[in-house]
Length: 359
Image 1 (tube, rainbow, N blue to C red):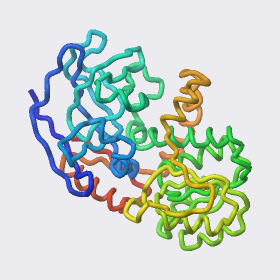
Image 2 (image 1 turned 30 degrees about the vertical axis):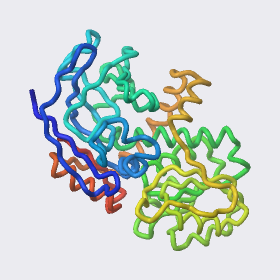
Image 3 (image 1 turned 135 degrees about the horizontal axis):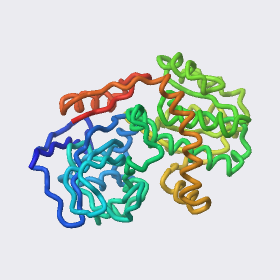
């Protein structure tokens, strides 16, 4: 059997890593062995580690006490199968560990996807347990696999944020303010807002170093550096969407919009090292936006096919925009993974570069 390599991180110190090497397991009846081809490492990947205990991301791929295996989105190939419906050689896309191999127990198998039915994964949302079968996946584009890994999981969150806010009438607000405006989820959200709710003004907040990049995207009506957040004083009722997870930044935004924050959604923690405990804030209190719950609710209303079609209608246009904004950098091997992981944890990655790892 081949060697299985996986990267583990300390749950309380994400830059501390360890490489575990074992023989790749052989699948039992009802199981398949996936060889992981590639996966993306983004700020969102780091978020999985930052909130791993709070939201349950550590539970997908178990590790020894105190350690965790961070999930990522990527591609894999079936290299051994004890499931009649799934052949060796088939390729899939989905939620994977930072590793070379993974055993899954396919169930609810259809032409386009299957779900890992391993007992430890069942408490988590089905969104993370599904694997797309590329041979029958209408979203698959061989020329843009890198962009899919980097953006598609985040874009689904972006789509659902806009859908949820639009259905709520934007809580009476006419402006949406997005922190960490250069982040991939913020870019996707700004795109969907522009396309589906063009009447709503979009203001991006970002670091001074990233203002030029964010302006170049053309996705925002206005872009402000964080040190000019007081300029929000001229804005009326607004929705805050916080991708940064920076408590001081949220306090500053509330102070700049006294009594005019219609809702505050917390989505990410790109500023995870700054402290995210908000303490006392004026109403409305920030609420976490959990995309799988929003997806389940919308699918229940419009059906899986309707949901897939609605997302696809926006994804095609966005990925064309993203292709002009971000270059894909490929890293090969465990050493590259460790370097890129630490770069992302430190928040030092340039917004115009996306990282894909091949182990």
